[in-house]
Length: 95
Image 1 (cartoon, one colour):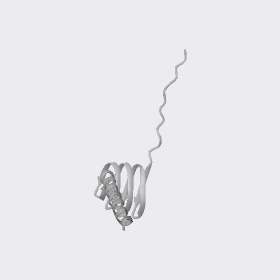
Image 2: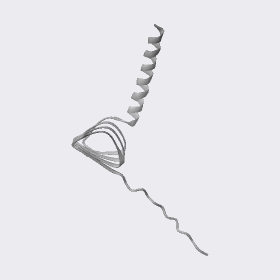
Image 3: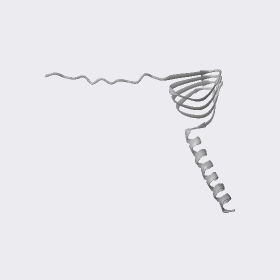
Image 4: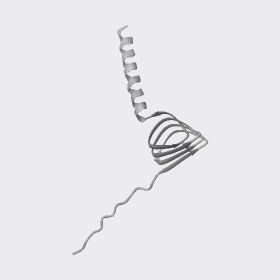
């Protein structure tokens, strides 16, 4: 009787690094940002120093970066902005 072994294959870890620059977005398993401005970061683990991040959807944030919005706050902001624009649009169509 032959037996088969269960092998699990893991995808290689994606590591993204941004240093002294500007990036619209960065996504990976581990993202390192140093002295940079980044629009949106999606990462399992974020290490950022002396940087500004507009929106971060991450598991853990390490370092001294300024993060303007995390994912839940960004979603709430988007919903509120969408509702406000819908109300303004309806009011403008009535005139």
